[in-house]
Every structure is written in structure tokens, then in C-alpha cells.
Length: 141
Image (cartoon, rainbow, N blue to C red):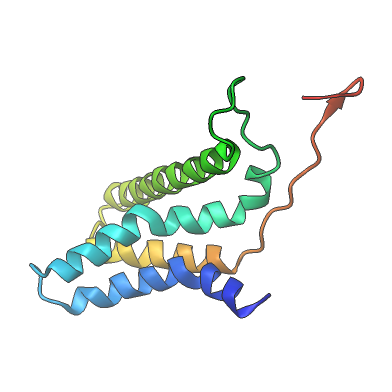
């Protein structure tokens, strides 16, 4: 693993620890709110999408019949990953918050700490391998 790969891998957990440290700022601080929003909207999802990256790129996007954009596959895959990052982050935040609400232990600090720890663990997980495409009588599914 190169140092650049390590930095990219540890960026979401670093964002979580930065958001946790932003709790020391005054309650109405714009910097505190920005750190929380950026991490909660993208941090956990980015760590999870990094783990699933090879499996997601096993099948490239299929473009329209007429090719107006030569880089359609690249742009489509990038948009897919960005949307998946945001939706997975929101889903994980809602799931963790719901668990804390159900156990009558909800606080923003607990939710943020739990998400930061989960993102850190996901940052240390290896990437999943892509399985080869299944074939039926010589054609790929």
C-alpha cells in the first residue's frame, strides 16, 4: 500500500475524529456544524463504498445506443458512487440513531462517536474481491 492509498483510506475516519473534536467549539459555531454535516453526509458511506469498490466496478455502466459522451461509463460510475456514499451515510446515521433512541440512550455525542468508531473500523477493513461474472451457455449475465 502506497502512502497516497493510506491517506485516501483514512480520510473518512479522520473526518469523524475531526467532527468529534469540533464538539469542543461553541454550540452555534458554523465550523462545528460544517464538520458534523460533512462527516454525517459522506463519512460512513465513503468508508463502506471503499470496501465494496472492486465489486461495484466489476460491471461497467452500459451507455445508450448513441454515444454522445465518450466518457459515459466513467461519469456514470462516479455519479453512482457519489450517490451511494450519500445514501449509505444517511442510512447508517438513521440506523445508529434509531438504536440509541430505542434503548433510551440517545445523544448526539454518542451517535457521532459510534459512527466515528464504525468508520474507523471500516477504514481498516480490506476491500472485497470482485467475483467473475456468471455465464450461462457462453453468455455473461
